[in-house]
Each structure stands twice: as C-alpha cells, then as structure tokens.
Image (cartoon, rainbow, N blue to C red):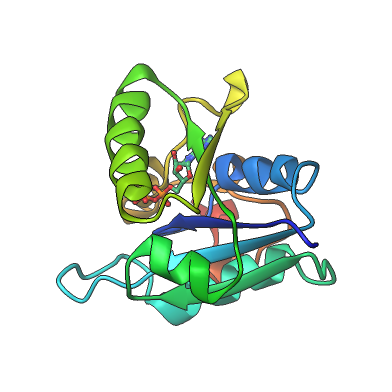
Length: 163
Ligand code: ADP
C-alpha cells in the first residue's frame, strides 16, 4: 500500500525550509500532499491561489508531490486522502512545544493518523515565511530564502535585482 503523508501549513510563502522538508519527506513516503490550510478569519500575505501556484511551480514534474488546499481539520483531511501520517518540521524548542500539543490532540481525535517530525537542517532553522514576508514588505532581496527559479517579480510584484 502507498504510504501517503500530508504536509500541512500556511506556506505564505513556501520557503527553502519547506522545500527541503518536502524533499526529505519523499525519502520516507511514497507521496506527500502539500496541504495549504485556508483560514477565513486570517487574511494572508499572498492569496491562496498564488501560494498554490508558487508551490506547484517549484515541484513541477514531480508526480509524488501533490498540492491541495483544505479547510477542515487536518486529521479529517488526512483520512479523506488516505494519508496515514502528518509531516511537520521542527526548527526550535518552541516549535517542539507547539507541535507536541497539536500532535497529541490530533492523536486523541484520530489515532489512525500519526505525526512524523523532521528536524530542520541547521542552515534553514532561522528561515520562516514571516521572515520572507518582512523582507518582501520592504522590497528587499529575499531570494536566498525562497526556492530557486521562482518568478519573483510575478509573485511579489518587484524585481529584487533592482533594489
Ligand atoms: P503553520 O502556520 O502551520 O506553522 P508554516 O507554513 O509556517 O505553517 O509551516 C508549515 C510546516 O513547515 C511546519 O511544520 C513548520 O514547522 C515547517 N517549517 C517552516 N519553516 C521551516 C524551516 N525553515 N525548516 C523546517 N521546517 C520548517
């Protein structure tokens, strides 16, 4: 049976940290569903459609990576998609405390879905979507923190080379 994991998050936007985790996840799972959570109460930085487009452009041609949105409980989304695991990344001890609570509550709700954590590689442990958003807001060069080859101008509205 195919082993499928859901990698849930806001991905606002996808960073090199997320990219690295997804690629490492492919060594463990047959398929990874990158699941962009839609939160109607929270206005994002990039619209959800652009977040999806960015992720799809990074993983174009990789049929083991599927990109979807969801707006229900992560564990319910996993079951709907035949995923047995939730994949999450750990950068710091603060991430660990936060993730521990979520994973334990998820397990109480749906014990058939388990959580798997990968420690961030050290070069990515300070990289976050919020850091990228901050740099982009001030029209800085955030390319180091974003996957290679994305159309920066299309997604962020300016050319970082001209800054
Ligand atoms: P959320 O809002 O659910 O935390 P994010 O998009 O910020 O969504 O993160 C999704 C997942 O990716 C989380 O498990 C987070 O810990 C992980 N992650 C984020 N940045 C990195 C990074 N630099 N290295 C490894 N994992 C990361």
